[in-house]
Length: 233
Image (cartoon, rainbow, N blue to C red; front, side, top):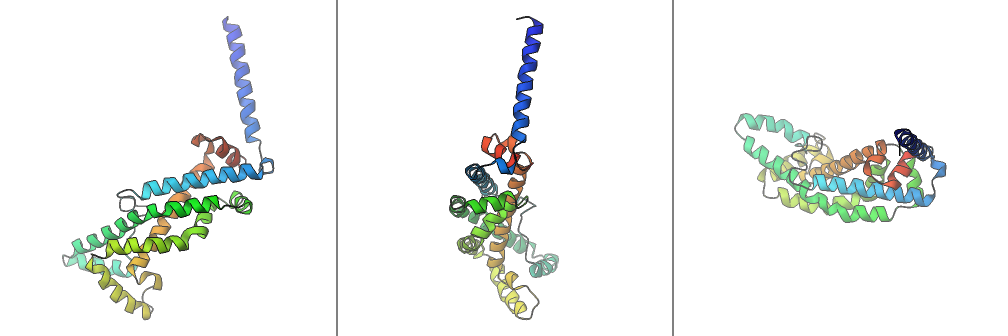
């Protein structure tokens, strides 16, 4: 084959490839079947959940990540500044570590409930997610799983903080402060507070993965993700 034939063949191949891409990107939501939409969204849900659990459920998944690290409740944070000046910094650090380690230990428990939510997704759920904005997948998970996951996470968080005496002291003081309206009710119990923040961190990381999928579905090497989320472009 001479150079002119080779170049002609290469140009033809490139033209065909370009046309195929254009046709793929020309898809609209109206072109998607309910089966395609559901399959694509289930794939996105699974990838988002797996990624979030994998990141957060590892050592320092919370403690070493500034985006989701759980800080002291506001009321205790103010007191901690004073405690550090009196040489009590180690106690504060111990509690902070226990809080975040509890979150890291609890997150893997989310796997089954998140999977159940994926499998239970309806056609109406799919339509709502497709047209619901950049974090609709995350909102779907939160609506379906936040309450039951809170129940599952709480004992793990409680166990992690049980050996830290400062946690019980905080609960005693904050509980009274809550009655006076000085502390938010959800912040008055450190175990409840950490559980809520753990859930916030989980859904935040799912939302981060969701945004990546929506912005670059082709990058995931999944034909169904490309088809479904490419139709939203």
